Image (cartoon, rainbow over the protein chains, first blue to last red):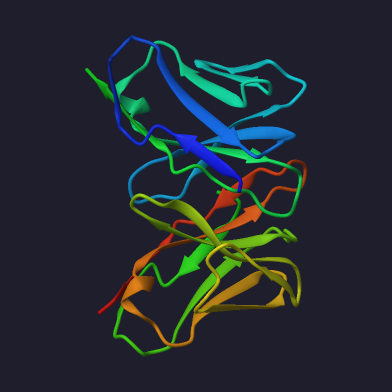
Length: 111
Length: 112
């Protein structure tokens, strides 16, 4: 069955460092992969979409890579700030009607 | 915020009672979704709709029904609420250009 794995343990880093979150998937051939941010008590918010033919995508301090051979996406936040503290969800997409989300990784940036 | 509202935002009910949650959108999106989110399980799809009167089941649809009689409204009904349905429920719509989803603020439901 299709499976999405994100590190369930919280990631704690110091302000100014680069945070790297991992999304692994199995039994999938996604055409794209999306990353979302979720703050406590709120709905997820879309951040970035990367397609299968794109190796890397950037948006301000965010960078996403997509390796279809490894079946993995890495999500980087450079020069992290305490305001980046949140849970980050990945969602591989196949172009079908519904997305499946990973359970998310909580990031805590310490000042 | 893609003009999505959910009501009620909080509800406490008793086991065995019917509950209806409402999702309303203002931007005429075709696809609408209901998810539940629980610790350790992440977001799980309950039902979704791809047009008026067109709905399909997600991975955790047992005990839930949906209706969509108008483009802007997608209703989720728990016919007879159980304690296992205590959760946070999110509604979402799919963007017009990409498969990006936009979420509502959520409804926290407690079944005693």
